[in-house]
Length: 246
Image (cartoon, rainbow, N blue to C red; front, side):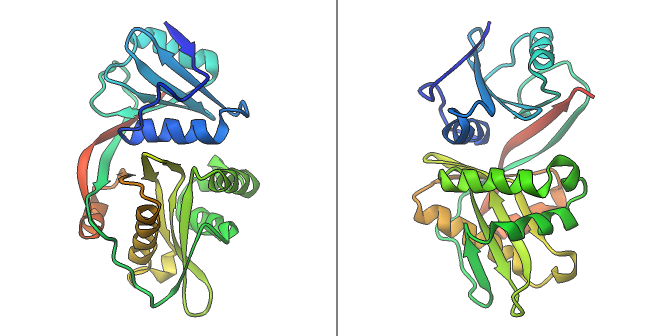
């Protein structure tokens, strides 16, 4: 049986999925923008954000029940651990990385800001991530990220070159006392190979460490990026999967 939950007492942010759910709850529980559920048969926790249902638990509910529930609430995408079994075929997988470094190294050659100038993030993502504009308009993105940052549920770093142009960013849109999930690291196509992304990620890591946030995760679909993240202090800790009903 799937029922709604109204408080975060049952949300244990012990992995990137729990962190996502708790951060969303902290940011949006009183707004009605996101919805939160528990499956009493499997103890799976769920959060619906837009058309995505995030699942944190040891086992998925009955697949037909889950599919019917998704259709009922208007979710067409599931995000969950790659270890969870299902009978759906349209799934994409990637690696979960956990930060195990001690102190993030900082490079002060360029200007880096934390949690300010948030308007500069969207053009970077939109110009370098295919399909970004289809996912969210500038206004939707800016209102969302600003709200999360104000409530301590997200953080972001932006690197500027010596001409004052934003050239790279690292965004953790899910932050709570127990951890953070970094989900967007981007450098302008014309500015790559100059260490900007390393500076953006390192600055974000140092900020999270200064906030005493220990469980820092990053999810990537591209295995070719692992060689970039390993020297920064990340190690593979699991697999995520995104199941799409379309």
